[in-house]
Image (cartoon, rainbow, N blue to C red; front, side, top):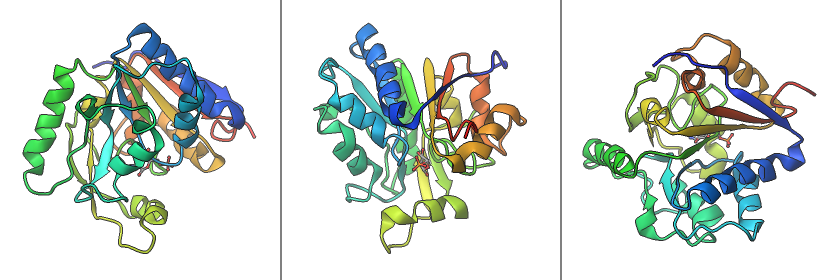
Length: 241
Ligand code: GLP
């Protein structure tokens, strides 16, 4: 894969961040009602799902959803990314279970389950639109620094900074040591990618992803090897305030 282009960066006011991303998703579903949406969790996409659900003109009845990542061993617990996505989007959008590709999380048979995830996604024709958040250390999904650019979906050890950042979700419980993530190679096979970045604390990471060397030190930098990436940043993340 070659470096084809610099990603387009769309800078918006924080109050329009969610609605702008929601419009990109709505546009994808208008063109292709059974589009496969790769969806992340986290603080960043909260306003995106809220804005998308607030619209009355989006038909989710044929949309398909592929989860981006999960904690190893999370199962159906309230703390799982699956339950998070259910409560922030899947339930309200009434996405039927057969149209949801869950990230496996059971440690038993996890290697085969990750391969099955990649096969199913391929059978679906891959993601039409992959939404991503940006980790403070440059991770995308749970692809931590040192992740290869051609990685498949797999179990990864979580870095100390990621475990710290995820502490708030775990409310006193110990954050799991491992995550399960869509590989960077799989992410790069999406037809279109939108990287969502908000807040001043992500500004330096975003700059590194866009202007630093392309490589495993900053996994998000690999996105520059894709020809259709939109970075949607609020002004603070873009370093404009
Ligand atoms: C987490 C998740 C990612 C998420 C990222 C940013 O660790 N594994 O999927 O995109 O970190 O999270 P946030 O949007 O809460 O800053």
